[in-house]
Length: 534
Image (tube, rainbow, N blue to C red; front, top):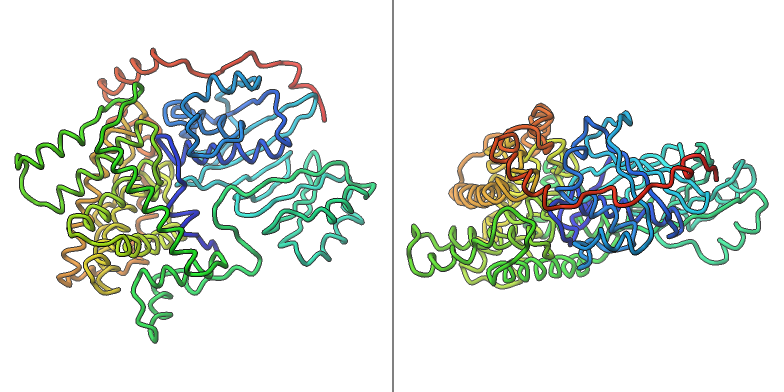
């Protein structure tokens, strides 16, 4: 059973770029690839399947930027990311991107072949939504690396001797024999292997090489990992004799999931709230960035809001202002929190923080609201998806709307059952939302959909506070949402092939942007690398 973390799967990463599924996830894959090569890379061949989403969106939605930034060892919020093309050249890494049939079964599949001085390694990885990843193959061997452990690859010809010895080491979470074209033992642990253990391994005749891959997620997993509940129904049963609010249940869950104190969970959420608030302030102040479709519009909204030129509604208009500001920061390569994704980064914080500020609430109340939202997000991450490539925009803005509805009820002092009702109704209203960004840029209609998601959240919070009946329990709604998302056609799931993305105007905008951009490949790929063996 998958046990999502609020800070891994739901809120975060802290990042720059248009898309968490494309940019932040690609960067994490690049970081793992860099470690796999012991930080020495001369050339990389990147292959995307023509039937996936990356074939048409890898440049415009930031996959190239993220992946190459990761190969350079950067963080997802590094200020150098917009200059990745010049920086990869300075690093002397030759890059070739090829669209070819790699037999991918997931729309966000990365297949990398990495080279350095005759050494060749291969890696296949997936972006699974909201910046989350899974490496599924290394050097022809099946693996599952999600960035939540220290992973050590011990290359041996035969496991006899080394494997039994490793199995006796209590500090290791798991030990697995992986038989590919370069067989290795994969070790997972919460901490890097100690120097003494590494020294012993290097002294063994069978050991040919050791590669250490660092975690890329903020909350690590462990073999003792457990959670108090993983469905809404289980959460209600857990709470029968406790009478905890949704935000308190989030503290209980994340504390057990990450093996960390509740105080640390609170502090992590406080840090994210502060970043969100800073992003909103930056957006309202004004943003500039040449390579985007929409300019700065939130300042104009704020001016007309203050001069009473808009239809009155202080809370709703504050929400719209905050959502617009956050989206403009994202589109100008500013720092944002994917909540739950970069494409849907504004609906939840805009709704939660906008409501709180319009009502004069404290930072502590904002943290409670975001914790409540995070708990709803855990259920979605565990039983559905945040990836538009898999479930359309209902997986991103729709999910954000359900999470935001629960946050607003929490801010209003509503009950646990009212918060769950608001989330259920908001998700029900979001079924069938397609993902069709104009010119493959995550700006339009993404801005409007984020505003709609936040507005829907406010409405659903209010009717839940009035005890409207959601009728369908939240667990069943999430299950149905997953089924609906999977039934949306491929062309309408973030491929740039349908909906608004296929309109003549969108095509003209895309052509104009492409004319002004210099796309990869960035260098002359050294053909002889293809035939060198390790």
